[in-house]
Length: 321
Image 1: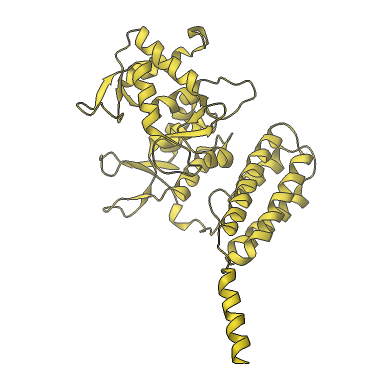
Image 2: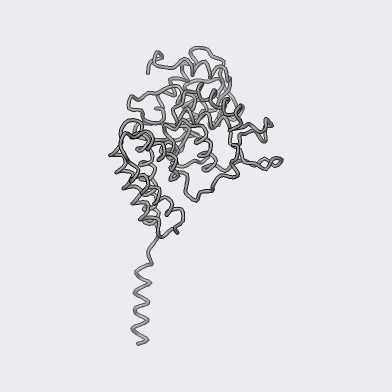
């Protein structure tokens, strides 16, 4: 990728920050830049390394907070493409669920990377409502508890990074929107103490609890699809809501058939919509399909009773008779 394809805003903001971890640089690049006309999630390793090279070539005063093996004599080093490559080897993970901060591999064949796991992209790709993203983070990553206030909170930096890297909201617009929500009292930064820094939502303690896993709780997305669709899709969306409600109340044994129903219905829904509604539907279909495959693979890993054991039992029965 040529330097002319890079977004100067990444270079400017990285310089303003001064020191970044590899995943922070990646999230910053994801928020401002795209290297795929089809809108695939994440960024290629080549593009990320090109940004590191540009920061080095432009003599920007940027340091990389590194965990790379062999660089333990100090915690930060002037950024370079070689240093970033070492860091990527150390920090990358193939996990599809959140396992903490790191470099998540979304597509190994194309070497596409993200600061967030694949399931997060499937669940909230294209979501620009900071309130929805706040609630999503609260479900997938338990709130840090403020011992004084007794309230759960979400990191504002992570919320902004998610909104731009996954939701597709311009980083400046995300910051402006968060400031508006803060001023309106909807998302309030309750403390500036390093041990308690975070956001809380007005009325969050009174919200209805959900037994759905975060990757399946796309009920708000269904409302959005109905609003954006030019055709009447309420029969299908209502059927999906019914299956989701049944899933939340059922035991593990009954969930596999419900997952199959949800997957089938989301495929039907995708065929009925277009434009932004279709892209939103594709996101929930990917999420439901991944969940169904995960359920099947878990069932396949449960070992069957050994044949030898059954034969021995049969033999003992024959002897006793």
